[in-house]
Amino acid sequence: MSTRIAIVGGGYVGIDLATAFDDSADVTLIEPRSHFVHTPAMIRAVVDPSLTERALIPYDKLLTHGRVVQARAVGLDAGGVTLEDGTRIEADLIVVGTGSSNASPFKPDGDDIAGLREANRRAYERLKAAKTVGIIGAGAVGTELAGEIAHAMPDKEITLISDEEALFPKKPDGLGKALARKLRKAGVRLILGQKAENLESTRAPFSGELKLSDGSEHRFDLIFPVLGAKPISGLLEALPDTKTARSGRVEVDPWLRPSPALPNVFALGDVAETGDGMTVVGATRQLVWLKATLKQVMAGRAVEDLLQYAPWGSKAPILIPLGPKRGNSFLGLFTVGNFITRMLKGEDLFIKKYQKMMNRI
Ligand SMILES: Cc1cc2nc3c(=O)[nH]c(=O)nc-3n(C[C@H](O)[C@H](O)[C@H](O)COP(=O)(O)OP(=O)(O)OC[C@H]3O[C@@H](n4cnc5c(N)ncnc54)[C@H](O)[C@@H]3O)c2cc1C
Image (cartoon, rainbow, N blue to C red; front, side, top):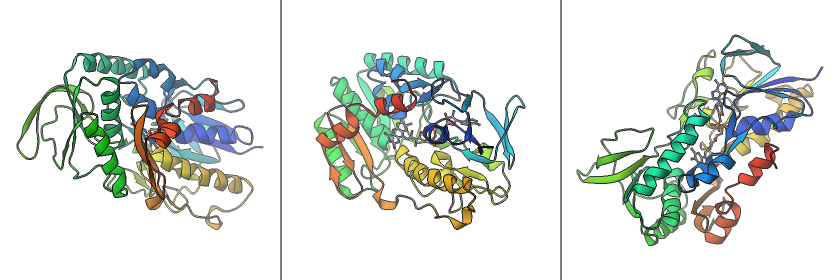
């Protein structure tokens, strides 16, 4: 009998792993949403809503042998996963990739794909009507959003506000400096080292007055709060002896297991404190390791005899397009500019790659 693998969450972790074992194991992917959400494209979708339909990809063609169960998992134990309606999915190996939530209109609220479409359309309409735009948070999403709006709607007055003193302070200096220079050249005003103190919402766009930590006040027709990802950790936190890190991610052992009581349960991606950032880039490295590890486990090896996971560390790449033409990227050893960023990501935003993975093209 082939190994039964239950995968909880059909994000980047879930779809990759499910596809990899579709031919060699009995795979069940548990995911409440009707569509996979390809996040990198959801930023440009704010200025080009026609992208939304290509960024939201149905699960129906993902697997040939295994199955996608459209449901929410509410519990798990060594023998399997329990769904919201009480159904049991029995499994030998369980992988949890419940990911994270983020602000509207970038990720759905729960499984509400129709709501995400509507939020995207509304944000676009409000953006078109706005003259002044504030973006709070200059991580990858905020920085890319400023670049996308500056490229597609050059008449907007855009202000990017961060409580850090520089863009991408944890990466080599050149990356943040080059991006800041390009944004300023495109007319974006950067306010660094200032915290917004009276955000009306941290989860959805709004308009109004912002007070910053230096006491200054700024009025914007539209404000996008982009303050980072929130891990969806409840399922793992309910397992015996798990610990939640300050990041909100659940700690894992060197073989990416969250609970000492459940040696056949693995967790990775945004929900797990793996040592990597909350990125697809991080999840991709973990997936390479996990796929090799599970193959050996399925061949009868003990997990503790296998190689431990080693995170990216300071070599984690990051690609930051500022619209389809410009941008900068750090590729692990060096920083590159417009041309390579455009070829690697800016032009297509990996949409074709994920359409292909979901068997749509
Ligand atoms: C706007 C935006 C742009 C981004 N761009 C990039 C980029 O260009 N490059 C990059 O490397 N990273 C990027 N990221 C980060 C990237 O999206 C995340 O790191 C990635 O989604 C993590 O993958 P995951 O599989 O861990 O979780 P997710 O993609 O969050 O998927 C988790 C899945 O689990 C499901 N789930 C949750 N709870 C349950 C449950 N109880 N039962 C069953 N299923 C459940 C959810 O419905 C969801 O489908 C971006 C993020 C955002 C918000």
